[in-house]
Image (tube, rainbow, N blue to C red; front, side):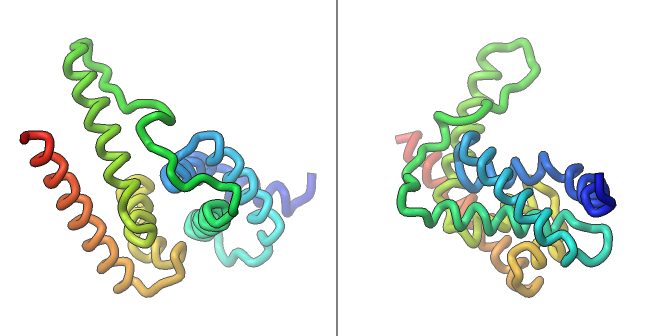
Length: 173
């Protein structure tokens, strides 16, 4: 095994789950997320010599994000995939079946609400709230100033809140 490969495995592979989670959220499909991550890891390995330092997570997440956007732009790709039908449900460990059903329903609703956010807002929201990246790391991933990250994140949270409340009000009618 080459030193380059060992170094890549040591620095990049610990972030494989985070890469998959990002691809899963952005693609809305576990199968497509697998393909996207595989493509991203190949791209990352090929350009590994460009990495400066040992913090490869933002760099890898940027590659995954770019692969997701490339994948979504392909003409054979369906863009109308519904979130609720894919992936594991977020279910509580609680024994109460009613509480589990409510949590699963809210998780589906949250995924569906996040899915309808515009890409630039959904990306920063997922990177911050789901992947716990810092503003600086998100700025590296999306290649934008930190101020842009902060404003997009604030806007994403506001849009998510507005859409959540609107849906809740619609359900109450």
